[in-house]
Image: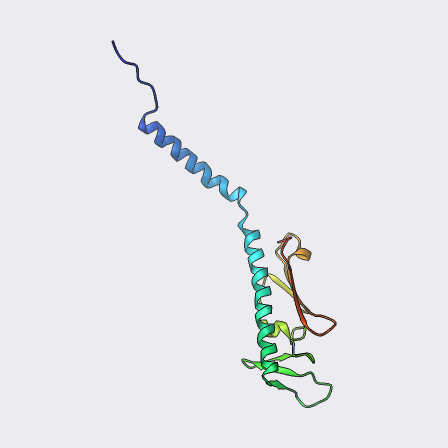
Length: 150
């Protein structure tokens, strides 16, 4: 009596694994969107840069490093690495190009920068992919981040 054996040969199993590997290599980029994760991380990094810069500017202000060019209408500023950063009466960087943007040194070709607000111009919805620095009515710094549309 012959015993009947059933199952797959080693070659058949290897071929199935190779075919699955090839399919996975082509299918993965279609289902995984790493661009949005990168944009979220980028906007959150900009917000972190703004927070750090705001703390450094305020610390320099508290340490008495404030300067003024002379006129009463000229805003006070703190000098960081040769860069003038304008500050308000509480010692926080102003929400403009001479303030927080200069202090945090935000620059990049994918960003739109205006008055303390940095948006990612490559995002699906740039209205919900931004980091914003603003001064409260009391003059204190506030940093808002929205990365839902990235």
